[in-house]
Length: 315
Image (cartoon, rainbow, N blue to C red):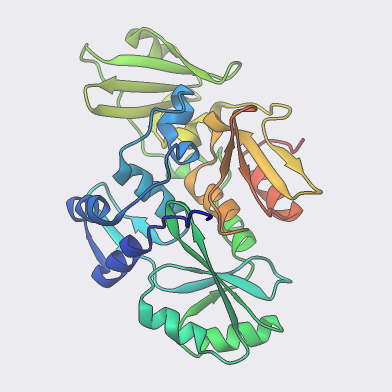
């Protein structure tokens, strides 16, 4: 008998009922409801950082990253989260099907299932909430039926999202940062040539014109981007692409299979990755032989937009 995938539907239902809350409340809910697939390697940034398949992040971090990428939950600060209102994200401009994102309840699912002229497909996915796809005979019918319930419909969601995201070299949103002067920090520099972290002296950071540095001390960790002689604090994945020159093959695209892939350590920044995930409703899978993350059902225009934002070329 085929084993039924264990989903995190109960977690999403609880979060939807709560609406918003604190980080301790989220962690407690994860401990109570969340079940992740064993060896969920592709969901862990630390695993990609260290290239160690068994080095999983804590379950609450896996849950946070998965729910963010799927467009269900937003984490406003380190201490707060809120549910995204129910929205149906259409896969492309020509499609007649869309993915349910955001808050859900049994009542919402029942109401969607009862809509006339709408086919609802629910697929269990390991370690994630069930994937709910809605189909109709035309885009207009789909949008009209969904809006009749008061839900928002996002046309061509991946392209719409990528069209509003600034390029990776846009420094306007980067907060300035003061490099720590006190000793005791472990400092590593991200190597663009070998895609790994190398230990450096703390005193070297301020002398570098452009580079990405990781500072750690105990449980504290932050990333400092040196950009044109100035220092900024940035998310790690954004910093990696900011310092990365155009590198052949970094972003690969298989047009026949519509699969976009990147090295595991070069996972795209959150919003760009969310757009890639919304092309299919599936989180990326990990190819252990190539050590790459693969995103399914990515149209060519989405792949090109993502590569352009990351200042890379498609292979």
